[in-house]
Structure formats: structure tokens, C-alpha cells
Amino acid sequence: MARLSITDQLADLRRTYTGENLSQAVPAVRDGEPLPDAATEAQQQLEAKVLLAACTAASVVQLMPPASITTPTHVFRTVEPGDVVKLHLAPRALGPLLFELLPRTEGGYGMGVAGLTHRQHRRSAELTAGDASVVLIGVDQDAWDQGMRYVRWMHEFRGVEYTDGGGVEDEVAKAATGSALLRRVHLWHDACWLRALPLGNGWFVEWPGGPSESDIRAKLADPRFGTRHDISLQRSEAPAEDVDRAMRTYPWPEEFVSAVTAGEPDQETERR
Image (cartoon, rainbow, N blue to C red):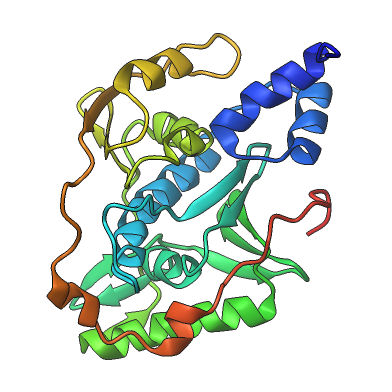
């Protein structure tokens, strides 16, 4: 059996953190840092807010048919770390993610990311706040429109009056840590779900099922792909029972539970 080159070995290691395929990971480790962190405070802030939103959005995706808390459910399938992080979404995740991220005001309270705007590309959507942005790969205009229909439907279903704009202007504590976690979020892809939030001097991460605490701790300590940020870990056993039967009758419109809102990972990662 032929031995893998150093580049191929590094690419395989990086893929355990990001979920990338070889055509994405090999050029990245050959041409740059093994797994770069966000370079600016603004980028760290936005990425930390995206991670917080994704954790909440995933709990909604869990309730979509067949409604299961025992099956791993996450918003992102793949993360491509770079100057601007590129995110590949799981099926049906776009609408719930946009609902958490887009700025609005409800009852005088800001929700979502203040100042977040959208720019549409041919095969992706870019979310920008100030000098920072993230790219949602595979989200073309049709997918974006469907995601926005979900946002409008959720507002109508909740029956809460709101206005677009506003949002939360507060900064996320220890945003560099949240950003580092987002760029390594594939480490938890076998967990039933993931919760991450700033706590004390660092971030707290908990998950049921999937990788052990020792495995995650070892990967976060890796000198090439890990991070030195303060992260507290807590794993629990996977749920023994699935969601209550009543939760399976949530009145989801068929459009949002049967359609895939983002395509397969874009192999031509240099094009938007």
C-alpha cells in the first residue's frame, strides 16, 4: 500500500475537524495554515454569533419529520475555514438558521445579529456584518427565497408582531473561542446535538452521544489543528427514548420539511 504524502495526511486530519472532502482540504493545507483561525475581531464576533444561532436552529430542525432527538442533527455539514468561512448546510437548516440570524425587533427587544445584511451570488449567499462575513455555499436565489418564506411563516405561526431591522448589538464574550469552535464543529458530527455558549473565562460545550470527552479534548489539544482557547467539555449519554409522540404532529408546511435548502458541497470552492 502506497504511503500517503505529508499533505494527504494533514488533509485527512483537517477533514475530521471540518468535514471537507479531499478536493477542499488538500489545497487548503498545501497552500496555507493547516486550520487557520479568524484573523480579525469582527470576523470572530460574527462567527461566534453564527455558532450560537446554529445551536438554536438545530433544535428546531430536530422537530421536523421524522422528529428525532436520537439521530445526530446539526445545521452545518461542512466548514471551510479561511479569511471568510464557507459553510455547507444540512438539509432543511437554512430557514431555521436565518430565523435566528436576521435582525428584527419584537416587542421592543432586538433579536438576531444587528446590521447583518445579505448579498446573493450565483451559487451561494453571503451574510455580512460590518467588516466580517460568512458564505453559505450552495444557497442560490431559489434556496434563499425558500429560506425567507420559512422566516415569514414562522413569524405568522408564532403570531408575534415584529419589524425588520434592529437586532442585538451586544458583543459575544470570548468570541475568538466561539469562532474557533465553529471552524472545528465537525468534531461533533456524530453527537445527537451540540450546545455551545460563553461561560466564565471561556466557552462551555455539551453534547449527548457521539465522541468521548477524552477524544474531543485530545483533538482540541492537537498542535496543528487544535486550539488553545479555554473550553469546558461535558458529554452525556445519548437519549434512551425519542421525542414525545405529540411533538411529531407539529404543523410544518410540506415545503419546509420535504425540500433540501442547500445543495451538495460545491467542489469549485473558489467560485461563489
